[in-house]
Image 1 (cartoon, helix red, strand yellow):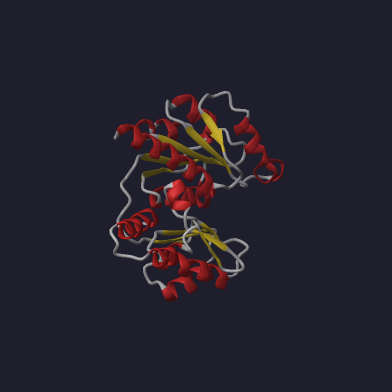
Image 2 (image 1 turned 60 degrees about the horizontal axis):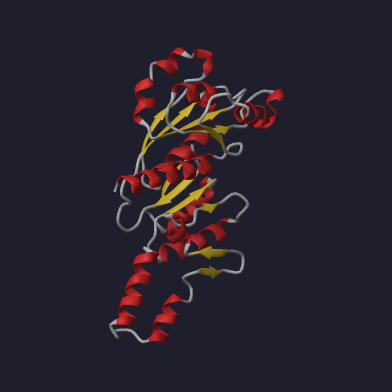
Length: 254
C-alpha cells in the first residue's frame, strides 16, 4: 500500500495535479513516524514485502494501541505478536475487526486487498505443548500470504504418526518444525524432505532441557541437510523466513 501511495503522489507531481510542497508534506512521515516511545517504520513493506510487525511483549497496552492506530491509518494489514488478552481487548475496543489467537498470542487486522498467495507452508510440532509457538508461526505465515497446513503432535516418541503424514510433507514448499525436549523431530523431517526445513526449538522440557537450549543445540548439530534453525520459541522468525522463501519462489515462477 505504501508503494502504491508513493507512486500515486509522484504521478500527481509529474502530471501537475499536486504541487511539490504538498507532495513533500504527504511524504514527510513515510520513512518512519516518531511517536517518542517508538519509531514506526512505514517503509518496511517496501523493503520486505510486509509491514512492520508489532512485538507486544514489554510494551504497555497504551503503546500497543498507539502504534496500531498509526499503522491502521496507513491502510495496511497489521500483525502483532506476543499479545496478551488485555492488549487484544484494548485493540478490539477500537477496531472490531481485530482477530485474536489466544493460543498463538497474535492479533491480526486485515485491510486493503488480500495478498496474493505465494506458497505452501507446513507447520509441524513434536507435541501438543509446542502449539503456542507453532500457532504464532502458522498465523504469521497465513497473514503474510501463504497457504498453511498444520500437522501437530507427530514427535519421535510415536514416529508412526509422522509417517502417516508424508503427503503433507510432499505438499509443502517450506516446512517449519517446532519441537522442545531434545528437538529430534527437525532432524527426522530434514532427512525425509527435499524442501527447506526451518527448525524452531521451544522452551518445553524437563530441567536438563535448559529452557530450550538442549533442543537448540540438537537442531544446530543436525546431520540432516537443508535444516536451518531460529531462536528458541521464535515462531514469528521461522514464518518470516518461510515467507521470504515462498516470496522468492513466486517471483521466479512469474
